[in-house]
Amino acid sequence: MSDSYDVVVIGAGPGGYVAAIRAAQLGFKTLCVEKWLNDEGKTSLGGTCLNVGCIPSKALLDSSHKYHEARDDYALHGITHNDIAIDVKAMVARKDAIVSQLTGGIAGLFKANGVELAEGSAKVLAGKKVEITAHDGSVKVVDATSIIIASGSSPVNIPPAPLFEDIVLDSTGALKIDETPKRLGVIGGGVIGLEMASIWNRLGTEVVVIEAMDDFLAMMDGQVAKEARKLLKKQGLDIRTGALVTGTEVDADKREVTVTYKDAKGVQTEVFDKLIVAVGRRPHTENLLAADAGVKLDERGFIFVNDFCETEMPGIYAIGDVVRGPMLAHKSSEEGIVAVERIAGKKAQMNYDCIPSVIYTHPEIAAVGKTEEQLKAAGDAYKVGVFPFAASGRAMAANETAGFVKILADEETDRVLGAHIIGPSAADLIQQVVIAMEFGSSAEDLGMIVFGHPTLSEAVHEAALAVDGHAIHIA
Ligand code: FAD
Image (tube, rainbow, N blue to C red; front, side):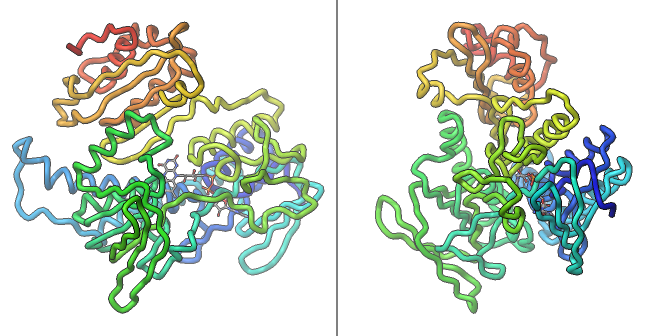
């Protein structure tokens, strides 16, 4: 390790590793510091996303979906089979193999791009110095011209439900469950809670989701949230809203946990053999900043940054889950690019109105821009176009007719303000509207584009046409 670098990046999650690679591509002498150790005690790059987040959860979601389809849907296509079974340990091993392949891949990208890696914990000191404590306890201080903090977030624990061995788990522990629980409780009906609930529901577990808020998926468009609740209920998920967990009691001998919660009807109890606590994540700032480093936190504990991710200390940037905004991998990565390009004197900026978000249930739920409720609350005049997948030939061919595409456009200018999709491949379809919105597209523009046939994308086209009542395939 040298004594000084142009750019020191703290954290090698999707924010930090992308920033480090771009910094090296732009010719900066770049060091990335990462403290993550995997279960074998080896440094693992990729942060939450690759190790215990986006990728492992999607690996399990995809495996469980395939099992579910084979069990429940193949017969419809004329495919029959005997003795369909799931080997959960093999499913988890596949997930682990994908994680190690991808995390190892980042190490390869660092080498190829000339990013230097320091294994250990970093702390920002005054005068843009970074103290690095290696896992063996040795300490080295390096000078940085610029620093990018990408230290991410960790799961929130709540006092009524402390983690306990393999019975009460956070999202990280939940990814290690290697046999199908009989009865699973999930505290939190948000993105992570619903993804975890879906994995096990598909494998035959009885799943109860306990959500404190009265509204289900309150952050999503109301029409989409209503449809999601209906479809998930049909799949067997027992979703209880307005249910505030007040306590848990683990019986270690029986390997079960009793959860007490309060809802409109009073105090309720439920017994589960596993309980997942998925109530949110908090920014990771412990032992990260010396008091005189000049970097301030906001009132919610996130590192305070301006629109270009620069902290109050010039030359020190912070990106991703540790700063305001949605906790999403692609938001972290893009902020990493913005920060590095700003350091390089470019005018990069981020469009926070065009960040897609997805819940990988089946069907997927995806959104970008404003919801109908937000437009109403702001008093903005808008038009709505909705197209159901039930009217899509491609969706019918795939037996994926649940859900719809909804597009919101400005009443006067016709500019697309938001899109909300629940349905097959919603995660990929939403990206079409994201691109359109980035180019300032009107609903009419989207309606005039030629979409291939037969594709699920045609539902986006038809929803755009529906904004002015011109959809072709709705009676
Ligand atoms: P992180 O990925 O948290 O990385 C931060 C890194 O910094 C870590 O490796 C940490 O070890 C390191 N670090 C922290 N402090 C220090 C220090 N002092 N010194 C050195 N290193 C340090 N997002 C999506 O967009 N799509 C999804 O499908 C999705 N699914 C998810 C599923 C689950 C179960 C979870 C938990 C999260 C999911 N997310 C998803 C969220 C996504 O993982 C995060 O938004 C993303 O990882 C944030 O990236 P980041 O780089 O800001 O932080």
